[in-house]
Image (tube, rainbow, N blue to C red; front, side, top):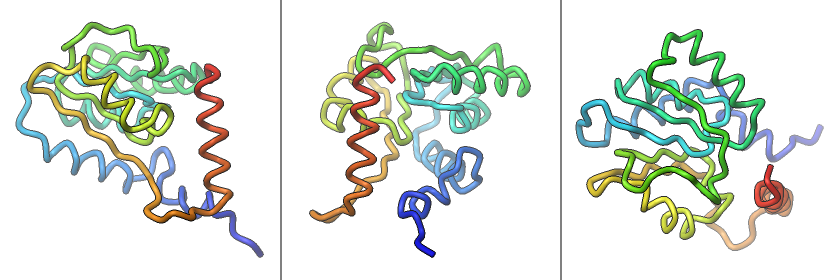
Length: 166
């Protein structure tokens, strides 16, 4: 039996997997103490990290994604968790974020900056951060010049899908 290499990579990163949320908690703890921060979670999907950030921070969280089905699921989770007063969803593209400059204490990106590229993400998202704000990025990457073709093909398809409007 042949094991799908993508399944192997993602087996520990399922949407509601405690090890994934452990990363979220550990990364948030490394930030300086923030009093009720405004956080933008770019590419939030169904929002498990988004909800965890709300529980950890006591701040306002905006989860942004282009997949309306995922945002609908996140909205259900927000309501079920009683966090509707602090967690909001925005259907929007990271390629054209229509939010005010310097409006966030933290920008959070778990597995999404790959779609526009690290350098472009840093360049474009910088304007959204307050002067003393933080950018937290969790991204899978390969550290060798010859990654498996299946992975390269998958990233290229996802990048094309995203650039075409998802």
